[in-house]
Length: 139
Image (cartoon, rainbow, N blue to C red):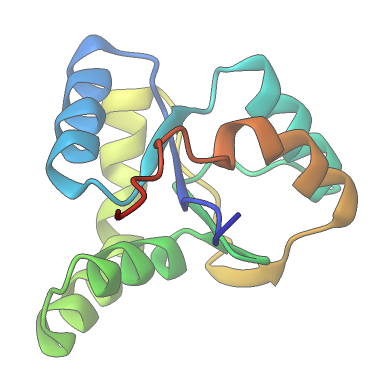
């Protein structure tokens, strides 16, 4: 089995956010999007963090990117030029608070970092990260 698909964990509490995440997943083809509200993600957050953050997260390889680190990773994987990605990552903390309070009813965490994925958290995510693509064998 190859490298597991990266997961983009987002707040799926509203229909517009769910629709945007689904559109991103279709357009990206790389990320699997999963709402924070899913039981498996809640268990993952509890296993990964002492104090589970309310944040945009990207789980990739053996790393968990939180907040602006997640934004940077998404933009990098999507091929956005570094200067533009840096601008978005720099703006994210300033915009995320007001946007979160308005749209989500609460501000996201102030955590902006990349941390190692714990073994317990990795096991909880395994079913979400496995690829469901059927390999094609050449004759």
